Length: 191
Image (tube, rainbow, N blue to C red):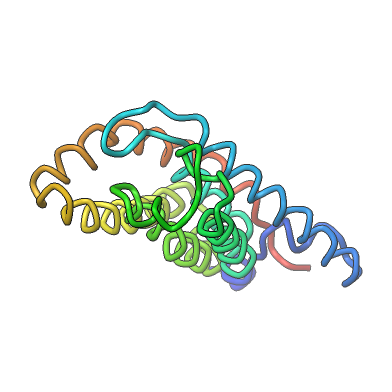
């Protein structure tokens, strides 16, 4: 495999050459990422016990385009804002009660999903559509595993699978296909 493909960097960190301008551009992307996550949570189909939102797509898009460091920082800050009471989640309220509620496990899965998918694309998985789709599938699996394990505390494992995974399968496939088409364009080899 070409060594340049293994050392690719997100466009976010290579857009501006000087260090102070790079910091500023990353700060802008950080804020935009938190806003995008918040908006994606508000675009919801209110199913019970867990709504269908665009959050999982946005978590993976941020992790896979920002890279592991900035992506994890952005997603972690979004979760922290929600824990502190900011109404950033699908619910109109924030706070610890959301994380302790039925959809809390999915939110807890956001951080490791962003980190792992960011690491995978930094190692070349974002170069090709197939490996990008596999990385996105792994990220989705992390979020849904975390979500179902948490939800099963409330509903039992079988019901958690039925209500917490089955209704989302087709939407997840569409999200993975969109990521597969989008993510490779965000990565470039260093000069």
